[in-house]
Length: 124
Image (cartoon, rainbow, N blue to C red; front, side):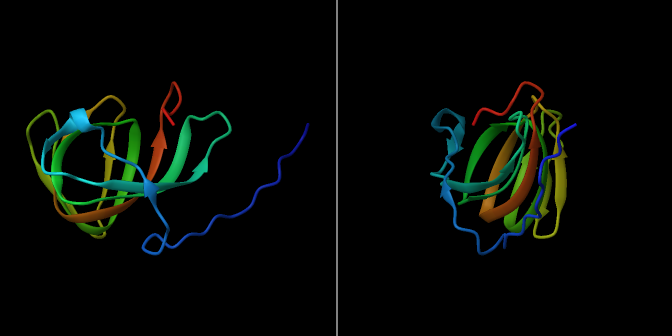
């Protein structure tokens, strides 16, 4: 049996350098939201990842993989398919199941940390 060396990962969510991580243009409903992000860890099988994402104000649809997100800064109203909107702001956590499409209305630039899981692998 082989063992793989493991190490801890530490990153400032607010201080992390972010790369372009755009909202797909055909998902945008209103405004010009600019998404940036950073993948901090990805599983060897490509099905899980942890990272940081930030987006400026705008309205768009987002189709999720299994995602647990913690809002670090900003404010967003999210509307799931059942139409029951809810707000998330700094300190709030939410889970979105794979395949769900939600409407994001970002009022104030949002920065979040996230954990993703996709049964068939992540698209990046």
